[in-house]
Image (cartoon, rainbow, N blue to C red):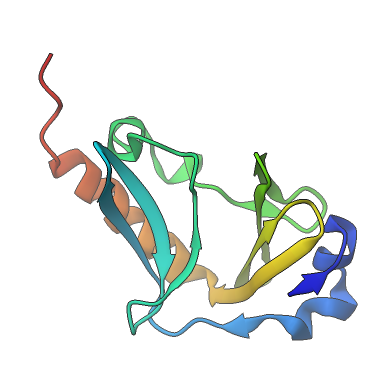
Length: 136
């Protein structure tokens, strides 16, 4: 666990705290009666998730690559909800992913090659479009 503010997490001086993800993937999976999403590595280990995002496949059907969670060093993508949060930003050829419990307790600090991040999202969007639409 790293007790850092959001500003400290994205600071250039703290980027050495992040570990590289080999084989970055985005996995859509069933959670209760809903589809959820998580980031994994080549061993299938979860590196980050979106615990409050339900029915992901329905949302992703309407998305393009321009909609994927990705900010920059000045304005990272930020999602904070009920004691959980994630920051995602691109800097040069890397995408940094920081997940926290609360606003300061970061338990997951990873980076992935930017092209791998985009390719994983492209695959996830295609998978969501192949998923049958729910019936009423």
